[in-house]
Length: 457
Ligand SMILES: Cc1cc2nc3c(=O)[nH]c(=O)nc-3n(C[C@H](O)[C@H](O)[C@H](O)COP(=O)(O)OP(=O)(O)OC[C@H]3O[C@@H](n4cnc5c(N)ncnc54)[C@H](O)[C@@H]3O)c2cc1C
Image (tube, rainbow, N blue to C red; front, top):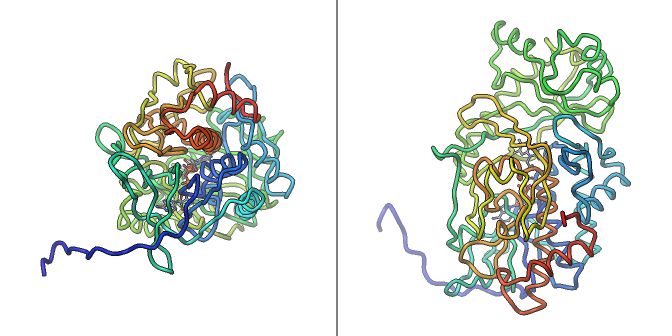
């Protein structure tokens, strides 16, 4: 036997299902894509590798960017309904203005999982959890379906349209689509394992920040914000971190980044950082999970020793998996560029509107940078359609965008809006018996507007 490779025998694979639309990945983009297609009467299956739905909605992050830099609401439609549902369940704060992120909605991960299940059930989306898409069925350049694996073994699901919402572009990659990864040196934004601290005296923290802004810096967010808002993101406290480092603590970042949870004494921490992680390489992700857990110990000492209100805090939970900011970006009919964002470009085939700044956590560990354009830009439909593979759409983190552009479009509000757009495009493709690339974008935009989405006209 060759010790480098083995030849797998040919095998007969059972076809589990034939559907109109197959969505891979049950994160913010996937649940919206599945709902949008199912709402229009399509038979839809959603395949999710983990044991729950929600993707990064479940790792302790707030949803960003429902409002634009001019203050207007730019994400409506299904994403807004989802957030309303979460709020009605007690799982989300109001959508709140944020000087740094335009708007921010604080959510409870467990409720997000439940809300996602409910939306799928109500719309008759068939869901398979603990099931990984491992390959694609391609004839020529036509994608016919995917191969899935789970405890029951291996089977096939055939579909008229597949929507890749895997974050990593797994399906497009397996189908042979061209992709890019990282910056000009191939380096990607670092990975972060979120964790939650409880028993935090949040009012004490707020009081310290708004009363002594010269001691507790909060970068571009004015100190007064913390007097007015019970829920907040705090980015700053750099002197406290410098002091902790001088005192011998090993801290992975220079800036404190924390977000209030919905619990009254709860704070989510966005501060572990593992550089050089490749989210598509299991060994690399394993190393990142191990490394991030080691970092939590020092971060806990930092909070207890240097930040007011955290004296008696403890780690109550860690996210179910490490957060991956960036991996494959599938090359599409159009690749969104940094200049499109900074020039607030409007596209004729715009299917979602985004106003989030270019927010790059530098892959070389050099902190992070934020650049605002002053208003919104469009995500063109061409960025959701891969260059060559037919019957495939992308939505979410893996769309066609440059390294810099993706640093803006990647946040969850826009990912949800793109998911809705992809689901509605899949519906039109099936309805007319055409490929997604052939969908009339005027009809698609009309459909989105009729269904309540926000687009610039
Ligand atoms: C550390 C960190 C902090 C962030 N902070 C914020 C923030 O504060 N606010 C914000 O709005 N955004 C934030 N983001 C960005 C945002 O969370 C993601 O870019 C966004 O969630 C991407 O959505 P998605 O639907 O494309 O993918 P994901 O949320 O990653 O969902 C993808 C889903 O697909 C599943 N999947 C993947 N591959 C397969 C497969 N082969 N088969 C079956 N299932 C598969 C995964 O299990 C997952 O459930 C942050 C990201 C990170 C990593």
